[in-house]
Image 1 (tube, rainbow, N blue to C red):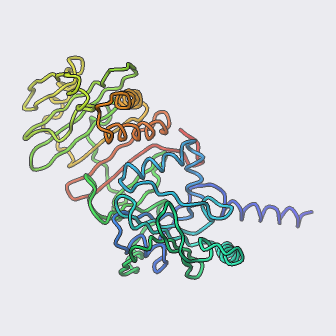
Image 2 (cartoon, helix red, strand yellow):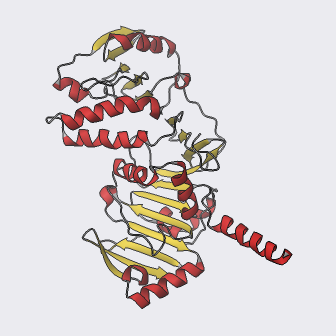
Length: 395
């Protein structure tokens, strides 16, 4: 009985360690195909995930909209819909790492999976026996696009056959730290510069920051501590622009959210949310000048808030870009604008699609969550988000 109990305990520990949904950070292994694809290929956007079947399963447990959320993020990032079929009995095969590389619009997609040895062997064998080129290797068609699948040891790769994967030195992965995910931007996406970013945890906060900048102190402005739905900052050679939106739970069929823009210098970089709709409805904003700041407010009710912020920012050094969003406070007004854009026939379709995707994004956020993005002058990037706790439950 003792031996049986020990065997059961050992089996349970094995399943938990290697398969059970949980957060499991890791370091990219230099020379592996997944690390090479993620860090050395020439795609515009690249992602490296350790133990994806565990980390992504933990994310799914934290949000009932996990799958939809991933699709919305992909669309809003400009990579289109990336929809791969299931891998045998698994949505994601148990593996040490997974890498995805893609160009804008979903072109040049490549996926590489470093599987567990036994699963790799079974998958290749099943593919050959069934004549399934998706598993065994060879040409496949997904959404009328031709891809090539192949094996190298226990690493399976699928790649758009219209281009090759131009690979450089894989040894650079040696300097990588441990993380829950790595993102590589091969080209800048405003406001984010090119570079490598790592996701990890700081208490109950998920943090994405520039690689190699662990322990750097946050310099987010004090105004982020205010109970506002949205605060945005843009600063460049042309001037400084600040967007503020107070929380609201009002709903109406033809109502646009309270918001204000403060700026110094040239024209503001931000625009009032729904400004194209407001122009169509002939809704004129309120204009003011306070302490060197020009102010554009949706209506009189938000003007005192904008005035107070303008005076409070006197002498404050602002980051090059910053954004703070409390999704649950932002949700009602996003729902309102999404409804308006869907029902007004003259609103451009890209505007309606943007607000529909944004509504899906904020609806999946837990109550009390907050997202803060900061980009400093030296291209240091930090994104902080309260998303889920260490056991996968919403806070």
